[in-house]
Every structure is written in structure tokens, then in C-alpha cells.
Length: 361
Ligand code: ADP
Picture: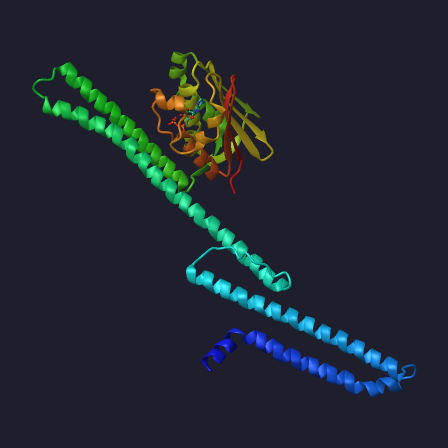
């Protein structure tokens, strides 16, 4: 009894379709057989032709009913199978792909396609979340390391001064305090860069928009590099085309972008003889370039340099300082202005090319 109940439960659709099919076959056959006397009365139908006609009609009709019922059964089965599959996925909170097809049931197949698309999107979102978690962890490790190094030095040097107060000469004391001061400044730069970087990552960051003259901004910024440029024998120039370009932007943030790029050009363009700022209006956008000659950026690093904490091997090993956040801040700010930035570098020139709309919407 129990087995029969189970059989009934699992094969409910099969039994339903089998019963309906048998009933339909019987009904059809009965209709055809009972209509034979009427057919043979039609002129031109002899008894034999009538019987053959009935026979063919029975075969064709029964095969038709069987095929039609079979397809309907497969369609119902496929939708039930899909429901069970989706229920299992929902229970297991899985984002698996449904790997069977229901070509004979186009509507079920359409549902499978939609479900697979949702699963794919969910997978992608989960992967992005995992990636973001990983890079957050990585960032915390980087920050801790970069803060700990100068902090250890500061504590070390100040400890020397504190513990050897009686034996240190004034010159030694001054040297240790000076080193601690240098390291504190290094920490300050990192904390400021971190703050600026985190601001570029905030989705709800507010830009303080003003309309500014790019030529004036260039001149103002280049003036602050004049002394350093003279010392390094680097010529600073600017060209704007047309001469007056009015641009809608957060002036402090745009100034930060240009300062990061100019500082990098002066710092890393080893052997550079010039740093040039250009701006050219193209349709409704402006293309700003910060160009220098001197040492080139290796092509394997040219894309990665915009990543946070990324520094080219030679810079990591040199004493140029830097946090590896400068270009990540540039990219973040430019993207906040609906723009984009990329770099090119060869033996002759290194260019940072910023494109942004003249007006923000
Ligand atoms: P940081 O200056 O703190 O190292 P950045 O993000 O500003 O970090 O720059 C990343 C790296 O890109 C630098 O370490 C440097 O090697 C390279 N770089 C940036 N600008 C230039 C440039 N104009 N010429 C050569 N190398 C550059």
C-alpha cells in the first residue's frame, strides 16, 4: 500500500498523461470507427477504400495523439524538473548553472536561460565582492607596513635621545631628533595621501564645482615649481589651445591631480630637460597632457602604475620616497569628474593624458 502511494506520488504526471492519452485514443478510435458507415455512403467511397481510409485515419490520428501527448508530458516534466532544480538552488543558496536543456519545451528553456543569466551575474557579483575583500586586506597590510616602518624609526631615535640624555652630545641629539622629524613628515605624507585616496573612493563624495581658467591654473601651479626646476635645470612650459579654456571642475582636486603629475615628472623623469603642460579642447572635452622627457616608464608597468601602492621597481629601490598612492589619487579624482587618464612612455617622452568633459552634468 505504502509502495503504491510512493509510486503514485513520484509518477503522478506520467500516470495522468497515460490515462488521458488512453482516453483520447479510445475516444478518437471510437469516433472514427462509428463514422465509417457514414463515410462509405459518400459517393466514390467503396467499402474497401472506406476501410483503408479508416485504417490510415486511425493510424495517423493515434500516432498524432501519442506524439502530442508525449511532447506535452515532456514539457510538463521539464518545468517540474526546473522547479525542483531552482528549489534546490534556493535551499543551498547556490549560484550554479543549470546544465541540461529543454529544447522540446521552449518556454522552459527560456526560463533556464534567464536563471543561468541570473546565476552568472550573481557569481560575478560574488567574485567582485571576494576580490574587493582581498584587496581591502591587502591594503590594510600595506598601510600597516608603511606606517610601521617610519614609526619604528621615530620610536628608535627618540628612545635613543631619551635613554642617553646625559651622554649624547648636542650634535648627536640634534641628528637623532632631525631623523625622527623626517620620518614623522614621511608618515604625515602617507596619512594625507591615504585620506585623499579614501575620498576619491567614496561613492557619495561631493565635488566643489567651480568654473576655472585652465591656463591660469597651469601658470599658478608651475610657479610653485620654479625654484626646484631651476635647480634641476628643467624648463617648465604651458600651452593651451584655444588660449582661454574655461573648465568646470573642483579646482582643489584638479590642482592636486596636476601637482601629483608635475611632482612625478620632476621626481622620476631622471635626466629630464623639460616638463610641459598642454590643454586642447576636443569637442565637449578637454585633453590635458603632462609631458616630460628623461627616464621612461617600463611598458610592463605602464597600466599598473595607476593601482594603489604600486611603485615601479626602480622607484621602490631609490630614495625618492613616495607612497604609491599619487597616481591612484589622480585616477580617482579624474573619474569623479567623469574623465579618464592613461600614460604613454618611450625613450623620448613620458606623457600622462587626462580627458574630461568641459562641463559636469
Ligand atoms: P609614488 O610617487 O608615491 O611612488 P605614484 O602613484 O605617484 O606613486 O607613481 C607610481 C610610480 O609611477 C612611481 O613609483 C614611478 O615609478 C612611476 N612614475 C610616475 N610618474 C612618472 C614619470 N613622469 N616618469 C617616470 N616614472 C613615473
